[in-house]
Image (cartoon, rainbow, N blue to C red; front, side, top):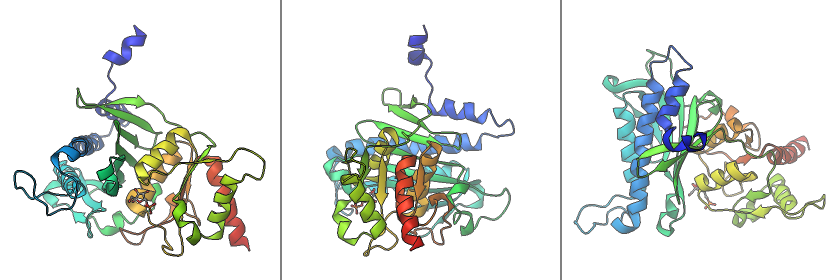
Length: 338
Ligand code: P6P
């Protein structure tokens, strides 16, 4: 009955986390408890996003719905849900959210040893037209018994112990790495459980897709411009790459992870540090790409080596298939060598 095993041997994300935990006998299960609260937040947001069109949850804050209640924008609502879920887990000490200017320091009574940096609803400008959006998160571990400070989250991405995203699209897919590879889980709404559907994801070594906002082309620096030119007019006579750009990072990165290719958000003359945020967009996606056999580059260095100096800092990012990123690294190295 092996063929039917998956129907009765449900590998839920919680069971998967417990299996991982069992590899660390001294573990007290804190991470598994933290993860279960992140999963709770994702389930809530998935439901809210799916209902948004019906419940008039989209649109600007300040509007009132048919019940005359103050409507919250979905990203504001999502942020509140994640903050409350993470604090109530009793396993966090610092929270950094794209939605909050300042970091949240959890009260001592509810404090744990993990810092979570997250974008509760990335790409939310795409909600009104039904394009996939997502939650992105990264997790740092702090020293036991030491008063947490902002320095505990101003760490290079390579110090993260876990990272992931949840994409709210045609299905709700949670992609997670705890440092031992990448696994994808799909929400079964009838069970309310995330089931392992993409075990041990590996990104193709080279891809046929490039993903960038070509509308910024006039502001690109030379290495980016040269790389995109090579994608469109390959010098070795190979077929040009296809352009796929959704404008929602979670969707563009998920496609890159599964199909291969490269995602670029370069610096340009208007935004010298690019647009994407280091802590809760660049680092988690770079962590996942490396764990899946790909890589992530800032134009100057390995993305995970970057040391952020502020919690909402931005960085250019080039991530995806190992060989594709190597090509743009060579162009930046040639430029630096001039
Ligand atoms: P642009 C969405 O607003 C977002 O933060 C990411 O999800 C996405 O990759 C990027 O910005 C799109 O930016 O400038 O191409 O519209």
